[in-house]
Length: 138
Image 1 (cartoon, one colour):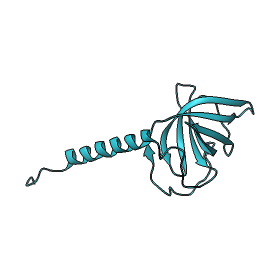
Image 2 (cartoon, helix red, strand yellow):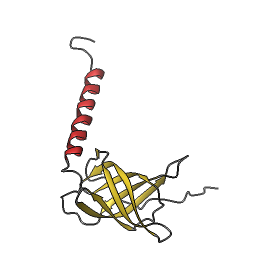
Image 3 (cartoon, helix red, strand yellow):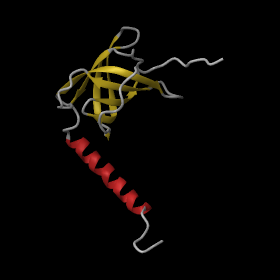
Image 4 (tube, one colour):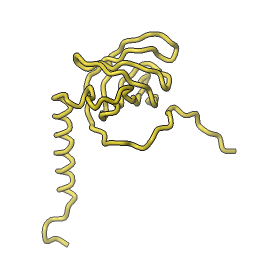
């Protein structure tokens, strides 16, 4: 018997771009799975021009619901494309897709995201050098 696990994601096309690790404080506003309005603080984990992954979401959200994410004085309307409840906590990670694809992502121009992206690339380069054999070594 092959039982299927209930899906908590919407079928989506393959990734169109790369993700940037960035932990940025955001405010999230919308309606939770019970239909109650909410406005909570959360943070980003990964960002792309087309969407983001949120952490520290303390409410269950329905797939395809629209929520608004605020960062500084900017806002972006997003659609929930997947949710994941973290074991041992009451928190969720949530995958969001921007409703409007205007290329001016809410978070990618921020100084924090540029600093974090530079730090990640520096660490990746240092790890690559540590793994590369020394010149002349065989």
